[in-house]
Image 1 (cartoon, rainbow, N blue to C red):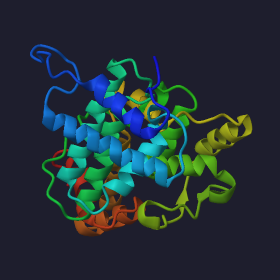
Image 2: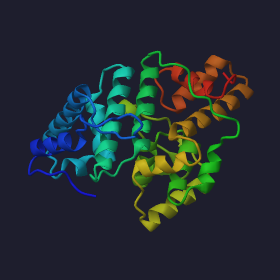
Image 3: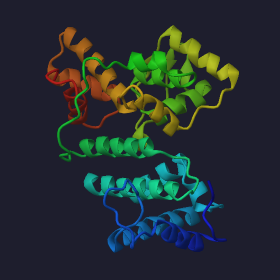
Length: 294
């Protein structure tokens, strides 16, 4: 594998366009992610110029392909896709996914796979639900699926990340925040002062003694956590995503509150606060993944 050619970002973008160009090639019957039309070329040139501006604004150095890591692209998408519709967000992220695959097929080193982009789409889909956008029916989760299958099967320390999500309902980035800042957030068995999206603070949560032991062991060993895309990819082996784990947390907490005598609306409101949702409609969307539950 290789890096993009060029001593500066502008020349590297030219190398991207050159490597992806396949205008004289018949696309039919191939799985290639190269550029076969002028419309795609224009889109991809825009993607790269957007990322160039982001890298320059952040004073990032190096080859553009090296800068296309999970952290940089997550921040880039967050800035670039703020305040646009979900359809636009998904189209942009899917376009980036195809371009990255094309570059990888052209022998360019980029340490990402499609699971990262799929997870990004899911994140923005959840945000769209919170804004009240109509985004279609949820993908059903089968009764054979359970996050414990993944937790028990994932290698260490990814099973710790999954267990945090399962017990707290945190997003992946929030689980990483907890693990990386244990002294700040963990007191006895209580998690405090953890911020979610848009700086909204989570309510305090109680975790099991088993999870506390796992977290303290991980901290004592000073193990470096895998990049989030590696975690996503390993979850896919069990036909699940990190948001499916959040959905299961929501489902089990909802059922508990219904058993306690709460109404559907009150139970959804309680769950929404626990998973840091702004609207109960997104919680109902999670519950709808289990069919007739809600």
